[in-house]
Image (tube, one colour):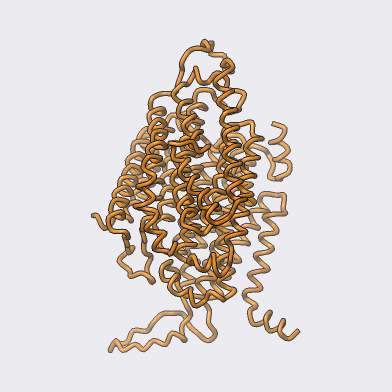
Length: 130
Length: 496
């Protein structure tokens, strides 16, 4: 039991990401409404972004901006700074996620104009009867 | 100039994509020539790069001059040098061949279409050239996003199919990203070569196993490997002709390249085959993919949808060959990336040419087509023979390597699946040929043309189509050279 608590509390950031990811995946697979599916997809992407952001963090560390000294003798101790790389990567991933969302909304709009509904089962019924 | 070839291949289409979308505001007729220039330059530089790689074996390029593990490096060896040349040249041919289809199907959107076309090439060439795992993810999404848009331009069920593809594809991309995250946590690096040097000490870590599985699942979704293929037939089947001819031959093949690159360069052959012992189950799954693709293809009543299921089956060929874990299997898989791209393009160009004249691709509308469109159908027969695997077309040689690899590895189920699918392909194509050779042509539009009149597509479509079908035979004749000069060196380096 105590092992389980340690595993849950010690790595709570990973557990939160897993929970978010499963919520997103559930929505993408199970929801019938296209916009709900879209939101689920976005939650899925966000969970992975949060995963990356959390792995760059460190307790008691600060942002990686170095102070300039006149004598150029800057001694940098890496343990005092968080790792900025995953955060920078996620800036790109956020851009990807936003553009995916944009393309998906445009397609959903096109689907709505054609079928006058966003419910997947009704659209499939219309497509079958064509 | 010569040292900048790898960057130019990716940057020029990107630049021209913006120029094309700008030119669309001035004059619509400017879009096509500008796009051809951009695409042609990219194809030219990738051929020059292939020559350079063939001479030196490896070309490294550092973007912005940053040293590699810190900066993003392009890492071009025989494998991606070959694939990038094939991809850009075929995309160039398809662009020329489908000009009339674009005018016919999406007349108002030429500017948007050609800039998306070029952006898609940016994504594909970037995936092929990059030596950085995260960069690969970003370019993967560039290629995927543009392909959603290109497919969504079609009519009928295209927007819905494209949206479904988007949901599945995004989940696939996210799985890959998650796998890269695991790798980054364990190694602290994103450069493929650097990760490969750091990994051997970590082979027993379960995080690396999970990283491998996540990456494989993500890439398998994007390439439509059998149980994850559901999006492909609808998406490619309802895409406009020009988009289908671009995306169907290239996207899935590039994803197979990514898989082979991950196995060969990043995780190493030892990890995939010795530590994880993934070989056997994956070969069985591939055999299943081959059989299922062939059976589904039999049930189709539409030519394009039939091709889509053949692609699902062909993906099984390449995955199975890659997972056989011996020299002949891997050679067959890499050779089949090249061959299958050309064969699929040939078939889709034929479909485009038929669609241009007939306005539909249902099998019962193809009656009497041999008399009406003799050149197109001759090319169709060449493509069909290559898919079936009849010598001297190139499809025979890659299938030969795959079968001998299967026999050497003792995977008789895989060999049986290959033979079964060849048989089914023969049935599929001879059914189409029978319908179109016998039976009178019925003019559905009532133009009143006599059934005997030859009314083939314009030369601008037929010349590229003839070049591609000749390519099938030429590549077949040069298979020995391609294998010994380009494919074997990379496999020997990885210990096959």
